[in-house]
Image (cartoon, rainbow, N blue to C red; front, top):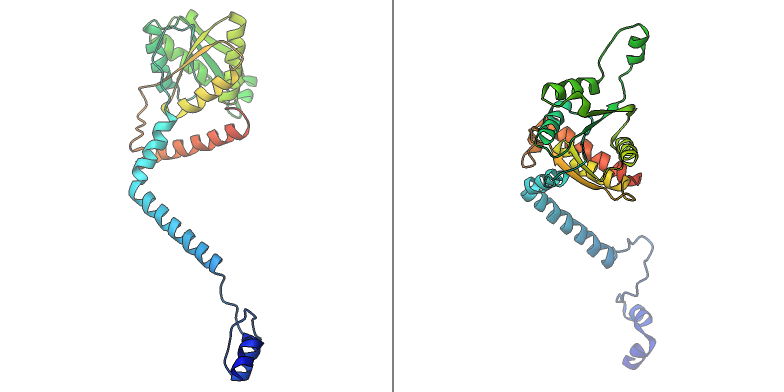
Length: 248
């Protein structure tokens, strides 16, 4: 009898003795136990998520500060053929452009027209003169000591940084220039530099970036101010868009 028990195998011998020998088969009404592999995977996911949360909670200030610093690109100023005062935030960028010009780093300042607001053409049709943003910028630069003859304004308006870079490239090629100083806001510096570098990749043109010192943006605490929180968030969205559109 004992010899037959070992010869017949676990399942059959289990029936004879009334015991239960597991064979991996799920009986009716029984629930299959969870897979060891899935269970361990779920534990790892929970563990990694907990570590990530703790790191974020502990170092979120450092992470956000790095995000702010990443947007800023700054090159040492040197003699160039042209200062490009990028459109937008005219006061802070215009002040810095005037400083660069008056310090003797370039003899010309280029400004691109922005797209006029809705209804602007109707005002002109009715004979009403209303200054464009580039007109206001030009008045300010003249008041800051830059002669009108040193100011260059694009003929056609641009919709964004990429189009602005294309307009500048046409001017540079037409006049045989070889170096540019881009004046812009700190949060816009990275995208401006990458965009111009992409547009000018086939040209032997040196491109330097000078973020305006007249901005109050501080990479160490920008998230505490609603204005810069919105500005940085939007800038990263634009960086992603430019990357997907192959503009960087």
